[in-house]
Image 1 (tube, rainbow, N blue to C red):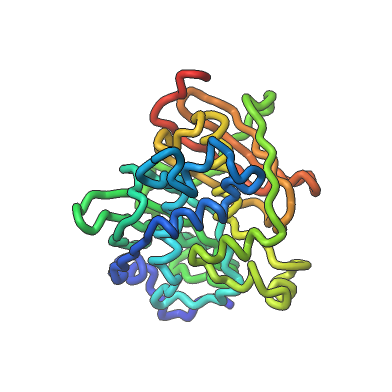
Image 2: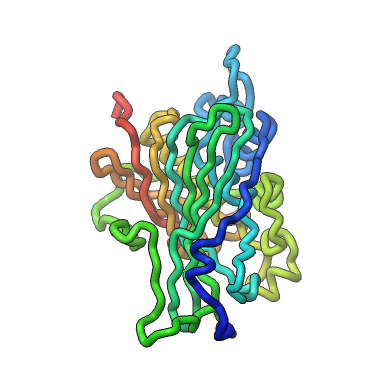
Length: 306
């Protein structure tokens, strides 16, 4: 498609997006946990009941760190002033989550969005969106999300011979994580349910690609696919279970690169390598022997039982 000649990338980068308030309750936290597979195999799983009920007098529901991704989904509608693109050709390539404070089990969050990267790749544009989420009452920073999206057909907007490229974080280049060739430290297998995408979408992502068979076929899939952020939730939950010994508050940062789609009902195998306080991981679909996700999780400390 390409851009019109009057598109000014600098105007997009400096654009002030409206702040968005996002309120959530314990019910939303529980629904999210169920959406990423908590207690799916065992309804009384002692490692995961804390995410879905008040176990043994527990006063507050614990919140999975990837719940942070919902703040980004709720606060940014991908309206990019001046940048023309077909929403059906948008690909969510990467996600980065930075946790600054443990999430309360209910709350009100103020989200501030900005463009943290814009790159002209000729046939496509790469847009990096950063969302900072603040606890509305205290003003404290809870987390940051950075989404890397590929807009096919939206490139060729550079005004010089050098392709346009801007990054708010030039010393933190976005690159693929190198997955070790050695045997994983630990491997965890989990099953998604045939209705997994229908459950996960109730957390706020109603893209018909994940629910409408006709829409999915137009997009090139045999049936609706699972949300990439749902797959990420499964992977990080596996890391918390196996490496953090069930403590979600040990997670500091999460980075993910979405490589391939998952069909609801498929089996996910997450392989983990421990490198100091970093867990490098990759997730595969067992039925197709394909890697669908890779990345790393940084921890604040290691579990004493490791």
